[in-house]
Image 1 (cartoon, rainbow, N blue to C red):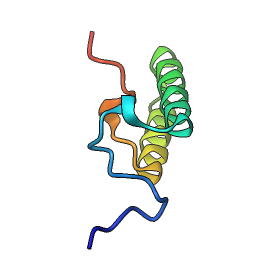
Image 2 (tube, rainbow, N blue to C red; image 1 turned 90 degrees about the vertical axis):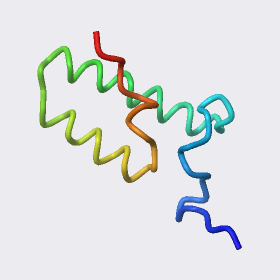
Image 3 (cartoon, one colour; image 1 turned 120 degrees about the horizontal axis):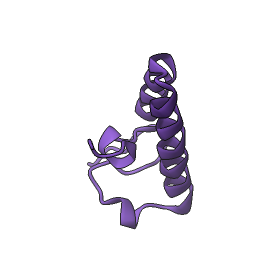
Image 4 (cartoon, rainbow, N blue to C red; image 1 turned 180 degrees about the vertical axis):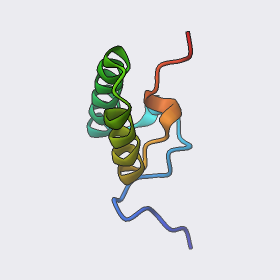
Length: 68
């Protein structure tokens, strides 16, 4: 018997392209807010984004910008 997360989402090992529109919007929001926090050098905001992503079961690789 396969278990799903408490939010009814599949594990984040699936490619983002197969995700539902709500999940895509959440990832886009995390990306945008992470970029703003990076630009401001706001470590507290970035930590809050990581906590939010963990709560939403969204892997950091899906929303963090690649290193420059």
